[in-house]
Amino acid sequence: MSTVLLAAVVLSVGLLGAVVMARAPRTALAAWLIALCAVPVWAGVTLVIDWEPHVVATLGLTVSLVLALAAGRGRTAFRLTWADGLMAVFVAVSLVPALVGRAGISEVFQLLAGWTASFLAGRLIGHRIPLTWVYGAVAVAFTGVAALALVEFATGWNPFVLIPAANDLHGAWAPIQERGGQARAEGAFGHSIALGAGLALAAPLTLAAPFRPVVRLLALAIQLAACVVTFSRIGLATAVLGVALTVLVVRTGLPARLRWMIVGTLAVGAAASASLITSVFAAAGSEAADSADYRVDLLTLLPSVRLFGQASSLQRLPDGEQFFGSFSSVDNALLLLALDYGWVPLALAVLLLLTAVGAVVTRRATPPTLALVAQLPALVSVALITQYATLTWFVAGLAVFSQAAARGTAGDQHPAPPAGGEPENSPEMAIRGGHSPRALLR
Image 1 (cartoon, rainbow, N blue to C red):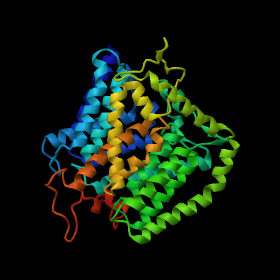
Image 2 (image 1 turned 30 degrees about the horizontal axis):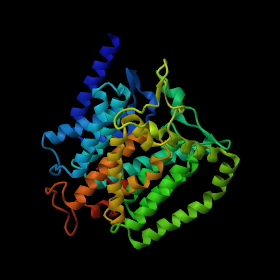
Image 3 (image 1 turned 135 degrees about the horizontal axis):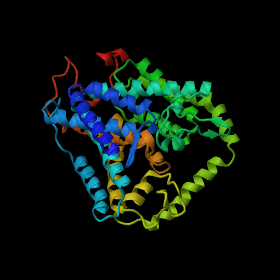
Image 4 (image 1 turned 90 degrees about the vertical axis):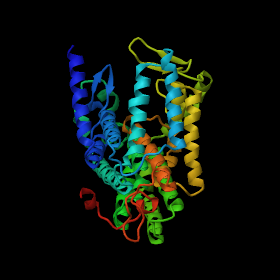
């Protein structure tokens, strides 16, 4: 009864908070970013399943956005796109196994509360807040994350691991990883790869933030430096790829001088960090090669994937731990999606990703789309873990909205643009500079 009562109290408080936040979308987004960036996964509670703080915060943000739009408080009219339909079909077919008892509660919760709610938050936030503000808020938040990661590397102190937990997540995620005898920065993300990939997702949005070019460049430099001290190959590769795509694809808002300054920053950063990275990976010996071989071995699980539902290779131990074949973890987000939900959901997810790639190839991609496409190497080499999963789906939803806005299909009720300017949610305005971070507080 105490557990039920606690759940009822938490639900009531959450709904009340969502109602309040529905009237203050910028505050809601800021609170969500704090939960995402500064509250570790083990700070949640366990009620049947683990309620991680960033998942709870995402549910609150999503409910607040839905309530606001239902009350007619949207900045633009909401119109469905075919990408929304494809996402809806993906969710529906992923739920099919649950109807016949071939999916566990954790998989259903992950799909609905973890992935779908995060996607909806990104898809709806632009109807309540200008994209410029969203990009700027993400830039500020992840520059702060990066600065703390650099402090962690310099001092060897991670304050987040000191936060107690009443569940098993602390033991799973709090221990600091090492590579070649060197501690890897993790911040509140519980894993160096999650931190590195999260910073990589934020980089293209930082370049699209409504700040002066020098501010954007400085924030980017801090984020890239933090990626280095995670000693994550995926984090480094996707960060550089995201920045390179932004420089090459974005047509407006990045003056030629800024583009060359970004290229120069990458070159100087590579030269400055080469010695450190080389020495750490050399000291790690065959660790990197062994990790790559392990990921190749995971492909042996493909024949066990079903059309719908969990793979036939799934094994559950009496203590609840599960394996696919002989693998206790699957470091491949797309493969794990297939193992958990089936070939059909995987095909739909890949189709969504291919449309994003198409937007990049035709140079129609917005910053969130560029950030998502740059994560493709990560999606086949790491699972969607901790806050990285939430951020990835949020950026996916943001990509759908921003692409629709760029095509003029997200709504034709934009507020009047500034004299001589574009609507605030247009891709042109989304990457113009001229504001300071202080403007976000207005």
